[in-house]
Image (cartoon, rainbow over all chains, first blue to last red):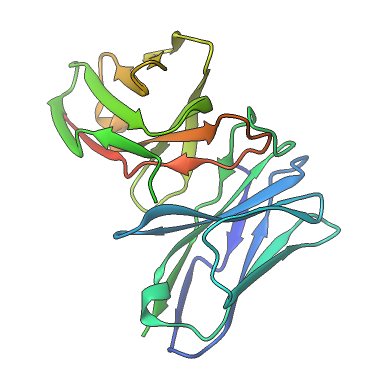
Length: 114
Length: 113
């Protein structure tokens, strides 16, 4: 068990809808990352937060947004959903967000857009 | 775009055999990490090797890094059925102070009992 909790495990929704994915990092970890995993794109970095502030942005669409709250949990909001957004969304955390700190991954939220 | 590429895409071996997976990357790095992913689960960190290191061991795992060739290899010795998983290399780009990782597409390892 990595200590990173993601909810929900599965989400099925229709095109055009909006969903929120939630992540609780490992106890003591200050940095949270979001990744998207799909068959055609592989693992893509979306965004990183450290202690509530955005640190780095990757291939995150404008329809997606995220934030990290004072209690360090994070939410990823996906809106105007398209079929191509169907993927496994992972949250990961690290103790300090530094380049030599390993990431600890949750078990992901599987999003299916119909 | 992918920074790293694992080779082979799939590997099938018998228990007790060694498994070797390779990773090539495109740009200079701070470190390279290997992760394992069991089907439908999150990734698990296995080992981190810094750009100034050439070899690292952890239990049955041995990782090598050749920065001149921009490549790394992961060797799993005396494999077990429980080692069946996808293995990913991930890199932190040189000069980056952040922990953003660029992942390859992975090698699917199947170990038959």
